[in-house]
Image 1 (tube, rainbow, N blue to C red):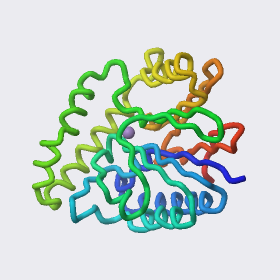
Image 2 (cartoon, protein in one colour; image 1 turned 180 degrees about the horizontal axis):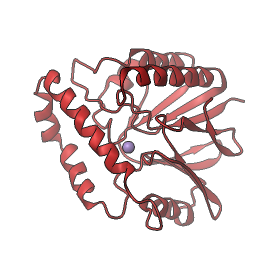
Image 3 (cartoon, helix red, strand yellow; image 1 turned 180 degrees about the vertical axis):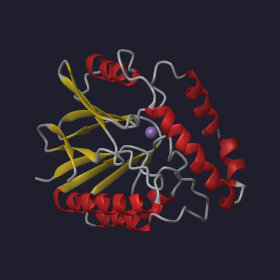
Image 4 (spheres, rainbow, N blue to C red; image 1 turned 90 degrees about the horizontal axis):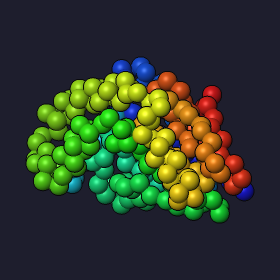
Length: 241
Ligand SMILES: [Mn+2]
């Protein structure tokens, strides 16, 4: 039987050309592996460092990876895409053109008899009221509409700048005792009896056993190249070589 794969925080478009080329190669080889050994793939947010999709236009530069994902779907692999804070402005391109459903809210799902809960992870830090307010503003319909009226030549370079700041900001957060993501995972596992809670956003892989469940943070593809794999019995955090 084939396996279920999870990865997040590739942040395509974040780095300079050479790093992006190398990253693209790594991700493509990982996706080929999934093509061969997977039956399902979960993208747990921030595949793109910046994605804003217009009714008739999508950002350029990620063609190989996008078409590879489409190929996986054609091969019969179920691919799901959980929007992160950097790629929240996904519209109908992935579902309509590629057959990849986009999830904008955290959700639970049963996979081979185990209960999984997925959340990109943004907005859970305890000391992060500022971000939670910003999140509401960035996701308001009227603001998205207004933004979409601006020409992409203006908005894309600007967004790339602010996304760098946002990532530095996230990276600098304290994930110690007061790790809001961990507390969230505990709640899901202890109270709601989930077997696995899977998140990204933290840019640092983590595996934490909590009573009868496990919280995984998937790390990133900037420094770690980590992903998780479920064979129907256990979930394992792995590094792509
Ligand atoms: Mn994120």
